[in-house]
Image 1 (cartoon, rainbow, N blue to C red):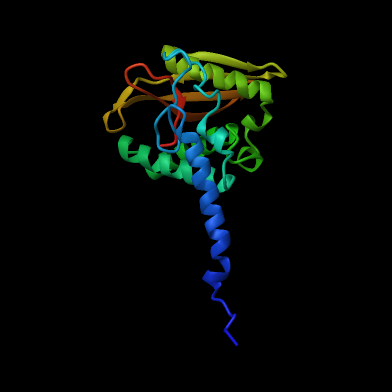
Image 2 (cartoon, rainbow, N blue to C red; image 1 turned 90 degrees about the horizontal axis):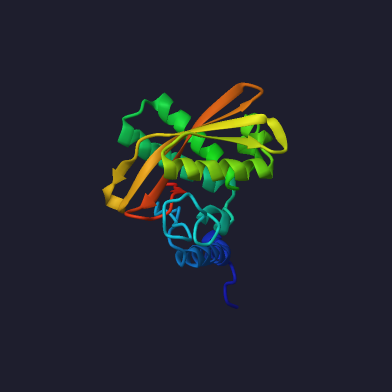
Length: 211
């Protein structure tokens, strides 16, 4: 009689292969767009200018992928980006941790991380309309290099201010980037985070990136 016993790896191998295949298909499905947030290449706007429009697909990579792995993916992306920025800017561990938290909140607002990340923050109070208003003004600020404000139409006490910082070159990825300070206040009490936007040169559309 043949031995039907299996090792733990053999037992879980089909599941592992299925998960790998699913992730691979999701990534390939996004590769046809003009950029990938996972690789750090920004998506371009539909009109081919840096005018702050949506990506050519109307969605960011994170939204298309649906955040396979949920909050684990958001946490990994935030940590990787914070580590990269810490090296570039020579941040202290405390400053890097603050950046990482800001990236986590930003990813959660894009649908990667969920309510657990946002819990206890003023950003958790944003309605869907408020989130869209915020994303719109972040894109406009990235493109115009001028401060912008936003307000949650469903909760007027929530008011945001976004301040774009100077552009810097990322020659290795053939793009230019800028950090944007985003401060959302509820009845005057604000909570600042920093998000990173990039575009391919010379005329790609601005988009949030993860690397």
